[in-house]
Length: 168
Image (cartoon, rainbow, N blue to C red; front, side, top):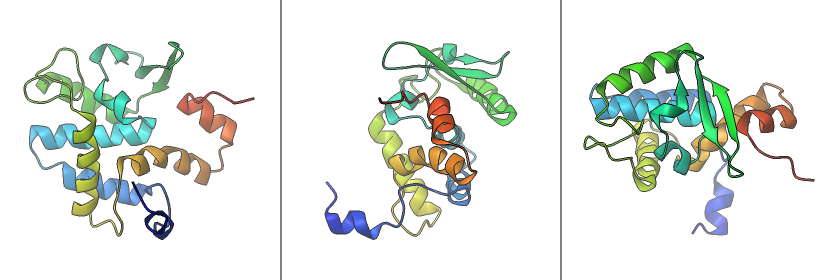
């Protein structure tokens, strides 16, 4: 648990695109795991995925033809988001090399990555990318909304994209 001093010493609770780019670059080591991990970070950022969502993503949630990805909401409804052409290409390559016919982000044995692994991956990538503070999974997750906000999108548009229900 963070102390008040630790929380207040951090300037912000999100990463900026240049930091994320550096983290993705240092993670993509030329190995299958590095490739998988760099795509994982891109997907978390582009789609504001939670750790639970990213570790449970299935191939049948990706519609390559329509270039969309589908997510199950807590109320059991589906939401979808568009995939960029870069994501489509990267996911197709990842699928060809994947040891799992089910999970997108899996170990070399075909088991889904753990939430703990994903959190440590982000922290390690932040260190390797020489981010000036400790990068966390939550910061990467929060970066999507921060990016949209910096571009002038309304809270309503951001919430719709992220599948966040409006509270009355």
